[in-house]
Length: 351
Image (cartoon, rainbow, N blue to C red; front, side, top):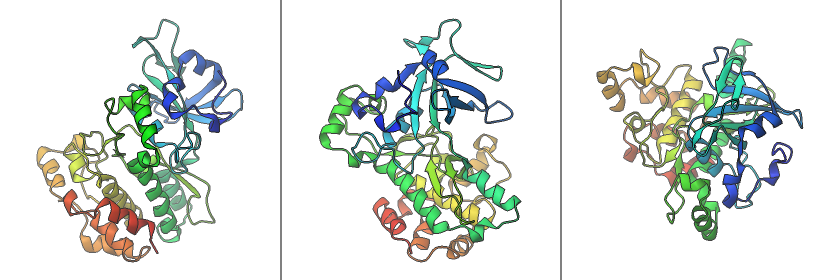
């Protein structure tokens, strides 16, 4: 089978997405593994090289179909069925390490720096230069002040386009495409029941680490910003897990998500980058470390930055109504936040 990295525009029709899942033997033939992205080898993500094109890619190991189902669902733009959305990290191919739902036979699997992967799936994705967190810290270490020199209007616009694609991807499809995609037992049947309309999704883990960046426009920030890592993605309003404490909306920390949860995360992320401190001043860094009392307090909106501080941080880069919407997106109760249409309209029309 021809390597999809060579001709990324030639992806199969959306109704045939299951054909993208190839056996692990095809992965070992097409890619030369390099090394883990994490020096501790604890994260199942590594660099690899396409042997046909010599192109560097990122490979991620996941156990569930869920992550790549959501990723494939949102990564195309319009109903062209062949073009990647510019705000979503391209997922080029999926390789299965299992046969008929069972563990791979002896001798199969992939080994990376002494770690053997013999079950689940390998996701082959675009290799960005870094994520937003790393790029921001690199600028600071060079003595620059990205909080004041970066073009945060352009950054917000790129982030908004990425999140909007996750929320509204199915609106660009015709009714016939929606019906056939689910009926044909394609990858979206993993997300919805047959016969149901395609759902609007929530990313549920919007944070700087999950925006992957390339280029640098004369000190004004990255030229390309793409959203990735769909491990927490879920249908809007459904149960969610695994969100990041520093940025997660209160309802996400309570185990569910709403249509506005991602906008809460985005506002909290922007505040942290502009103010130089997290939106929540907690003594711990992960949800698992919270005491029951602390968890309850966070869900009720305690530990959060003062509204005046948030307004001051946003005022340096955003005018009204953009600034007001970003502040309102941080309301504790989801019903008190601006509607999705209001949020989309205000953030798209920023000045």
